[in-house]
Image 1 (cartoon, one colour):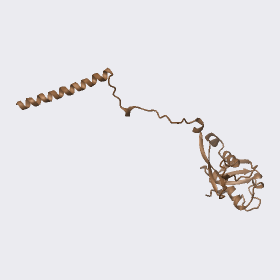
Image 2 (cartoon, one colour; image 1 turned 120 degrees about the vertical axis):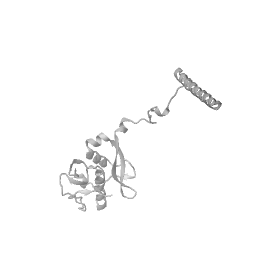
Image 3 (cartoon, helix red, strand yellow; image 1 turned 30 degrees about the horizontal axis):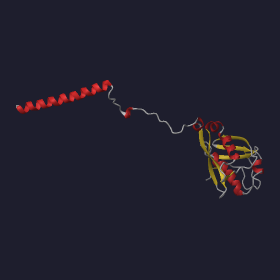
Length: 193
């Protein structure tokens, strides 16, 4: 019996000790002396190191194909442009950027000087680009250079999902060709890497 009574007293002392601890924690908490916080429950706002400008938010990157001076290969030049510009008139925008030439000094433009875009329209995934006569009259000539010019346009335009092929006309004439006749514009051109 003595053992049981000792055990009961011990259990009562432990319960009283736990009750005092709990009561003390409650008193300290209510008095504001101890702040209980859980960092996981806190929401912290992400603050970037550099602010993103409105212009950067509206920008997208397109690839414009130009010739590399070093090896005469057609390669893309990444260019950041305003999304509004691209969604408003994507084909005209890309063609005007191609006509304007590269920004990188190691690249050369492929479209002859004074070339103008008359019209651009798309029908059944074929983009028809009608260019001014300067496109053929001012071209340096030669089958390789002519091919690079065509595919700088085709590869640039076919990056747009809706364009599968590009047809080129000169002042409305579908049967045009470069001066030497090596490349004719009778058929649509598809992307070539």
